[in-house]
Amino acid sequence: MARPFLGIAIPHFGRNLSPESVYGVARTAEELGYDSIWTTDHVIIDSSNYYPYGPIYESIVTLTAIGSVTERIKIGTSIIVIPMRNAILVAKQLASVDSLTDGRLIVGLGVGWNRQEFRNLGASFGRRGRIEEESIKLMRTLWSSSRPVFKGEFYKVEDAVFEPPPAQAGGPPIWLGGNSRAAFDRALRLADGWHVTGMHPDDFGEMVRSAAGRVKPGFVFSARLAVELEGKGPREYISALGDRRYLLGGDAGQVAGQLSEYVKAGASHLVLYLGDVPAKTYIERMKHFMKDIAPSI
Image (cartoon, rainbow, N blue to C red; front, side, top):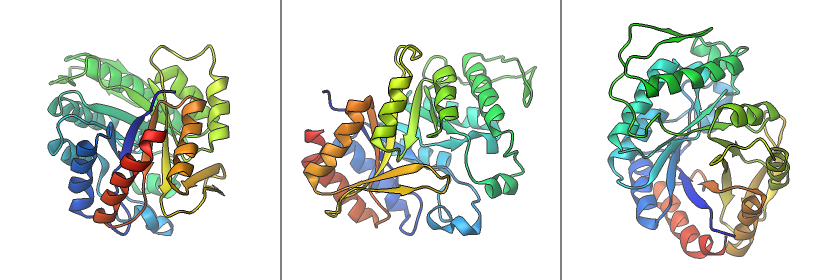
């Protein structure tokens, strides 16, 4: 079993966000040999969800900052809630990031879950699935042509210039987030990868197996996972959306074993979130993980 690609979720939200939680974590991730670093997206969350997403640096701005202090490591969004943003503007921003970082970008997109945040942004929560699908087609069109033409239900582009293009021909890979069957099916149809958050390894494996015969060459199965490294065991919980989630934890051997379950189930990329702690502590956890856990996955 080959070691998966290992990513770090930047702690640019929560009680301990700071410039060091962005710049220091990003530089250290590259120095330690992590394969990717990722940002999270909320813009104007409702007060009932103040923690952890009230204090948050904006995702694409943070991604740009990360790209400016690293040279080789992949950078990605985990994920951008595309239906609550203008997809043309986002396509331009991400094309610029990909060009400025010499093609290191992975674009994670999702439909979102917070109805009030959509209201705050004047976006349609009820049509978010249809908007995401059209946005993917639109973004690929923009990334593939300097004089794009597009006509859809929500967007129309004509007599337009889109330059410079992304560094990656045709645009960066798109991974769709979401643990639901609808999100999974949409990813298989329209994207280059599927990116779950906290899904139980048994559920993840079942979904991957169900994709047999429908997976395009090069399609990526990835998981973003919260990991506690203080000797606590793993635990299950029910998310705000009502689905089963899994929080990893335990000693080094236990965590390596839990992560290996995802790899056995088909995950080639694992993105780790190591807790809401000061940047110095987060960096120490990153070092501990790479030294004592990663070699055993």
